[in-house]
Length: 409
Image 1 (tube, rainbow, N blue to C red):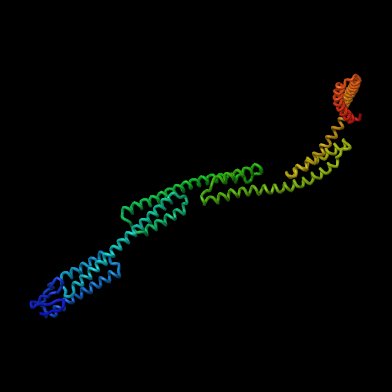
Image 2 (image 1 turned 90 degrees about the vertical axis):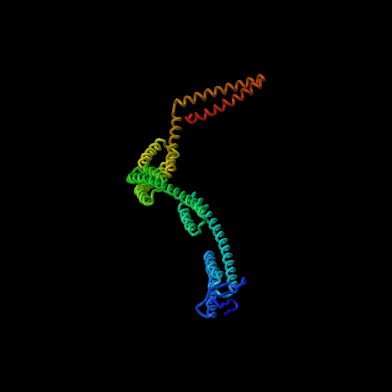
């Protein structure tokens, strides 16, 4: 019989291992000496030691899953429990128990970490959904569209939740994107329609502008161009590929018209400036007729000046009131001289003036006599009343005498 501290071989070749519960049969050995039998089963023990050590290292240094680690532990534990090795099997069991605790602890840590990651992922996805639903109302089509695409990429990088929660959040997220896309599509469809309508309007405006470009009805055509420009601005923008072309046609037609008008107006301005110079010379000559000393000669001279004036033509609008005012002043002076001459030489008017003066003189003389009589009779009140009446008649007489003087009387 052969033995060591952890096992022995009896005379029948049966190999035993010593445990806390007593000896356990390891196996039977008939192929060699007892020492070889113990050595064989001790190597089996060393193999288990190495296998446990490797498993401990894997658990410590790799991301071996708890499920795989537990399966490996149970596989080795089965070999230990079946007592097919000679050695300190209790120590191996203790190492396996400790390793199982480590694996369980790591399982709980990973479970907690996974739960935390799930909570974070849920919060992140809920935030993405909330932002997407807010963006769905936006009319900042470019920036909102770009942001929604970025949110999709962010969503794809987040862990999945439980199927129900993930599906519900994705449905909201997808619905927000679809709502935005639908609104954006409707907006641009309406915009395309508006731009097509604007193109039609501007086609018409450009065609009319081109038809007016050769007009010489300067005032009416310029006014119509202003109306066309207002219509152009009110029409809105056409499609980009048409807008510039139509504007070039529209603006080019206006430029042709206004360039032609500018040339004509420049010639007209030069002519009117020269006309102003001539009319100022005539006004200066006319002003020499005032004061009027020889009415007949002044009238003839002014008529000649006026005929030359009318033959000259237009002057610049802003200078017209001043130069015309000078001629009108001379004309009024001659008219006033004519009226004075008429009054002086009109026999009927002279007779009326003389008659009125005589009547007033008689009335004044009569009032004076009445006043003298009243005072002689001591009736001062009547005398005072007649004196006031005399003052009025005397004023009228003075005025009539002054008028009579104008007739040379």
